[in-house]
Image 1 (tube, rainbow, N blue to C red):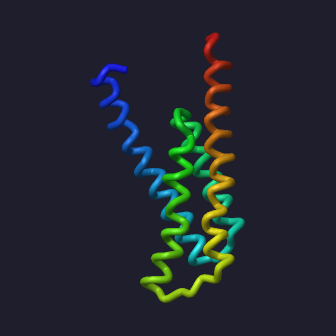
Image 2: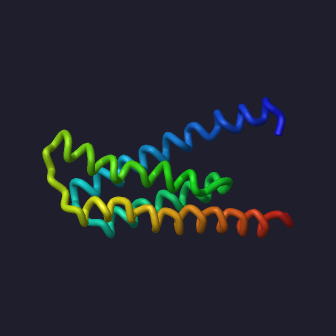
Image 3: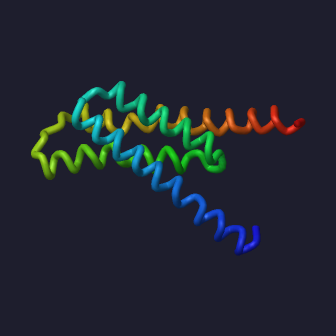
Length: 121
């Protein structure tokens, strides 16, 4: 890939990384405020599906970018708000990466299917 095309791809992906970070911060906030792991996992799943559809190349990056903010929100709540999460909550915050993997790769596969369906037009 030429350097100019690689540079334009990197700058165009920046807004998607920012979007992924906002989705992750929102999911982390829901995890701390509502304390419902299933809702948090659903938010991570939905945001990774969307990001996988929008940018299907390397879907694992969306899992990492969105998913890392859930345990970071637990840590921030512990340090700033003096919320004492249990061990199950801490381990559960890392388990939200699993639906994120399914969502990101599922979104990437859906995008490739859509591209193949509409390629004939």
